[in-house]
Length: 209
Ligand SMILES: N[C@@H](CCC(=O)N[C@@H](CS)C(=O)NCC(=O)O)C(=O)O
Image 1 (cartoon, rainbow, N blue to C red):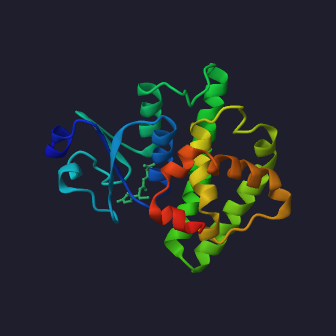
Image 2: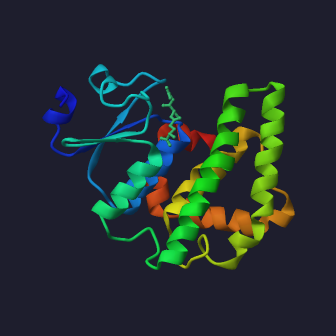
């Protein structure tokens, strides 16, 4: 096991200050008030000790003593099981499966489009990705109006996954039209949570200042 993992008694999260995947993990940590060291990693370079342990060399990476986890979904599901209060997944198998499917679709559709927008800057592929992401968000408007949180009265891992994208919409050049009021209200409900405020890095806070 690496020096980094051995010398730390509390858990450590290697996180990037503007990364959506890192942000969803920071949100879950804040929601559960988990005591953890958050180490900012700039760019794609993880500390050398971790390179051997995470073959993808990606953030977020979580180190919990001998356990090293990467991929934000694997990390948030682990955190929800290891720190069960408050629970961030429903109990019954059908709803759980629906929430897992929602996580899969958000990663495949929203997160992928967001990455393309960030990577392309002002170039043409960004315009297309921006349009697809905007349409996808708008087409979910009804879902967001139905309950305070995603298909639920309680916040879940799905909301912790949606929020980093909605927070970044100004950065992505996406403005929601008036018809999207249910989404805007839903977003504000999450943004107002102390846990969400706590999850923000300085750079993320600047997006909406
Ligand atoms: N599927 C991964 C994606 C993580 C990811 O793409 N992280 C980016 C930063 S936002 C990164 O570390 N890129 C550097 C690399 O992959 O080499 C997750 O959910 O954790």
